[in-house]
Image (cartoon, rainbow, N blue to C red):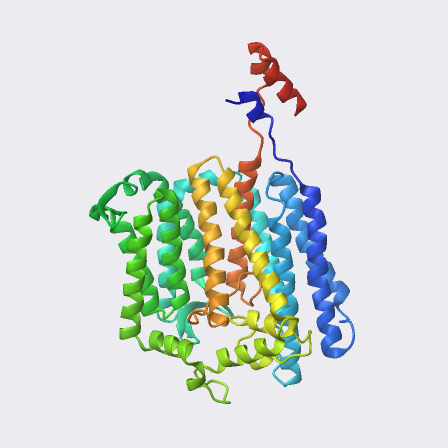
Length: 469
């Protein structure tokens, strides 16, 4: 058995210098892509490149300095990955703005997205400054759950909620529109983590054994049935297939991690299958999604607005892009409806090719990996489950979005984190990164200094380890 002093000797380094170097590379990606868009579309570098690059660099530097001051041991890779995605997304949205401007449909989504990014970084800073210990959030387990339910119900309030593209998931506040479900997913992670920390021992108890699988006890099915009904309510009343899948899948993943019981995955899979079958049989919008997924060409026409026009144009564009893409300005991603939001991955696939899409998927995979690494080294159960939940949010959302765009699964309507145009999604995801940074800072911090105790006890090995620190 190793000496306790050997365990005390391992301390995570702060690695803020490495983070700064990676941030410079991320800025090269974002600003370089913006310049490449100007060269590819207009044949010249954008005149506002210096102002744009300075704004982007200022935001990233503000986030970096905040981490240095408030979370010095936070994971050094998360922020650069997010900065690279956000910068690339801004460049692609700018490319689509220029294409629509040539077609006489002027939009300035890129500038609006940069403003939303500014708000997101501001909330990132505020979260790290105000939340010095993530364990405080456990006190608000049921408060967060109630707030999440209220947020999910807000779009159903007459006069406040509005239907966009068939889904009633938006609310209007003056000139602004907001998607409360993006905030609800963060609150639900906190709620699930707090609940499972308290009740996982009971939920982990085995019930009847069927085919080598220990099913959960019947008395413990209440939480998963409640979450299943909530997800069905989102599907039925808000017509939002993506959020319904995300919420139920998130709870199922966290429940399995907390209890380590495969039986919960089996029960959740059966409930999901039953819900999908019922949705297909009872609701036209679900049936249409499945039919378009299975036979998109049967519903396609040259008219924008046809049922499968969006997915078919995306398939044509990504097929034309091939392995290395047409280059910025060489494709026609503006033909895809809502390419700046739902189908930004298709725009990337057309002009940056399969290589660009794989690079984006790799970055998302690294974000999930860093979140899971944080969960592994976290010292408290609540922090572990929150990190697992936030990793699950990214993994599930990216799988559902990119799977829908590439016709792997039916379309769901979620946004691609940090890439797609959308203020509520971008702001919520910056808060998620702040929470992961706070948890990783707590997990990577060295244990309390025990110099005095080691010297008093006469433990020479422990004293040597502490002094080496």
